[in-house]
Image (cartoon, rainbow, N blue to C red):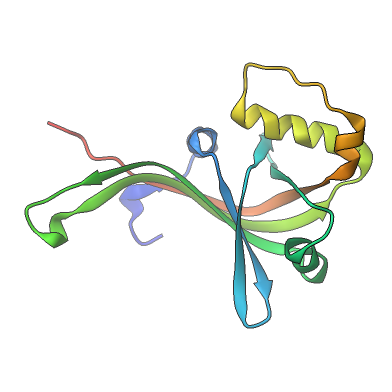
Length: 159
């Protein structure tokens, strides 16, 4: 990372950023151009392995691309605040972000509910959910096993 002073390297801090984010963008290889899709997500970390969880339709471009090449990049960001200056080059933006890559796996039925539970905890951590079996069977749930992850932030201290 070029700007080392902005790097976030501890997993605890990276997860803190992830908990603030509400969308994760996945990037897939699609012949001539990358294909990027914003998705709701959840995650888990066991002290060694980070996994991201998503759900979607059983068919479509995203599923075709996963079946063709299950390697993906991801990005999420939050804490945006415009910092104005007197001149154009004095403007900047506060932010926190997490980027990385990994391998996507489509989950079997018995793996779906634990994954969907992680997803729901991202948006309502205080609540416990029951999942309707018919609805669970109607969606594809997939996991990205993270190979590489990094965080970055710029938060200006106001005087």
